[in-house]
Image 1 (cartoon, one colour):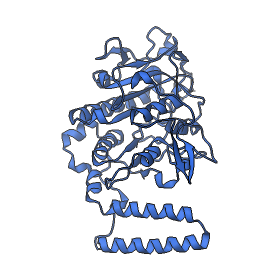
Image 2 (cartoon, one colour):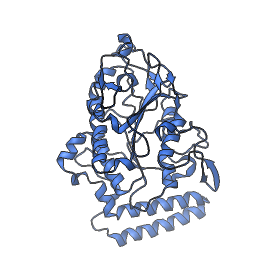
Image 3 (cartoon, rainbow, N blue to C red):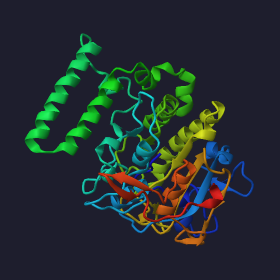
Image 4 (cartoon, rainbow, N blue to C red):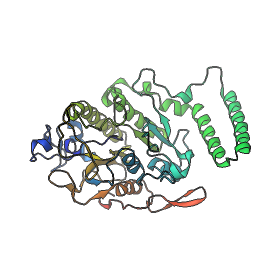
Length: 393
């Protein structure tokens, strides 16, 4: 779950109860199922599931800017408009392909910053490894995936005819424009679209009406909750990597609380708590948690000191110190890695960089983060820098 905008570590995972009020905020610390670990009292369900994830409190980034930070946390590399490093999901799509008739990498929500490339896309690997993008709200009563919206009289044979026509057009385009690489990638996209449109298994995976009402209520009847439930269904169907935006209806950067932070968090934290804990519990009960890595992270944190914005107190961008969680498959759980100083303004112990965080994900998923991937026939480092947090592996 991508907490785009930058969630406040001080109000969720790194409470400072002894700090002055202008730093600690209105929330209190609460005990969890892990001895010695305390979280915000606004996360009661996660406190009961603290043994199912681990927490890094000493994250730090080189940037406190949206766009740059989005790409950095999703790729482990800085923004590079000429040779953008690949996102985690794109690398998995290339390095660990699956045979299931579903896209290997799915994004829920358009996360593109107007001045930067969309975070987490394939970059140098080529658009064939870009995510399958779904912008519709899975909680909507008329939610559907447009690739399944073929006319009733268009059968599989006619879809195959469409594919032949598209191939002919692609060949013509390639000969006219001499864009052979693009044409090949576009052809692969056509194949994937046809496979998706004709796959009963894929269509069923996207159909939340197949879930009992009790399960849907358990996750929460909102965009985030139903997105997390959809993620579980897609993983069961064979999808390798799913990204859910952690917002309800306030648009991208919904965690960017420069003003009115606490009224906003009063709404957002219960939704986050409800949906994240439901996913952990559901995966655990289905025997899937040991093989599914679950991550929640924003691109950075928030300033220790609460500002006096005229629209209401808030916290501003802060890349020097923030918190993320990793749970489930491939990592040890119930652990706390690193610590921050007395105001959560910088790491005090065991600093973990964004490339370190991404390297840890790769290692947990069975990939060597120092390996090279092939891009346009040339080897490219999957992650130029970064070392896995070995304590978690």
